[in-house]
Image (cartoon, rainbow, N blue to C red):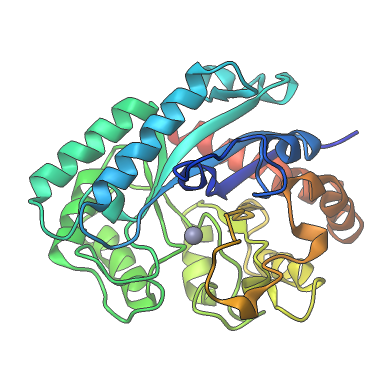
Amino acid sequence: MKKPVVDLHCDLLSYLTRPNTSIDDAEEIGCAIPWLKEGNVKLQIMAIFAPVEGKSHEFGLKQSEIFQNLNKEDNALYRFGKQHLETFSNNENIGMLAAIESGSAFCDENMTLKQGFDHLEKIIKIVGNVLYISFTHHAENRFGGGNYSTAGLKNDGKTLIDYLHNRNIAIDFSHTSDALAYDILNYISKENINVPIIASHSNYRSVFDHPRNLPDDIAKEIIHQKGLIGLNFVRAFVNPEKVEALDEHVVQGIELGGENAICYGADYFYTKDNPDKSRIPFYFKEHDNAGHYSPINEILEKDFGVDQTNKISSQNALDFIARIWK
Ligand SMILES: [Zn+2]
């Protein structure tokens, strides 16, 4: 029997901002509905993404409206809420929950922070619940440094942390610079901020050295604070030469004490117009769509046992969500 799967990160919403796209188009994106069904994905977190550019908040708002329409339309998706925590694995449909990938999705570089927070509230209202917020994407923005930058936490970033106190929305470390990650951790502890922390779609730098992968001390702190770390299937982050390295990332997560933190964050996005041709194929064929979750789970089960695999496949993410929504 296929295990239920919870996945912490995909880019279906930004893909759907393109003309003539469909959630059912399995040729175009690895998290299309036929793949999610085949992989027995029962809860898919949907990122609202925006790069650093003028009016980036409009792009974020557009994706929140797409999410809202997906919930209304007659399709296999429904908006996941507290009432689905117990029953979701028996539901024939796929739960979805929104998250924000970069503060630029609600606040561009030029507007007032007040306007930005108004946009954030609007997005939360439209999508119902936001599971996590990543302050940055690759680049630096007004909140802090992205994973290809060296900037740390800025004053607007501190205000965003204050805003998240007691909101039950996690801070996502998947696209922070190292400096931003350490600054956020210090600020949270110094100011006694009550906020869960996760890395929704990140692997481990000690297994494969890449700025998108987590240094051990940051991974350990996320584990210590009972957060989640989602395994990322993108070949460039797994180890471009070696499909088995996905297992090595699991080994490293367990080694750091993360048996209750490791989950999936596969990171399926639209790759066909990506300018960096050296990254093709973006995923190993064994990982290139959500339909592969069952064979991936079978491999994990051989290496790590049934209990650990159940935790990775859905239980850890589910326990985390139940805890922060309590
Ligand atoms: Zn990402």
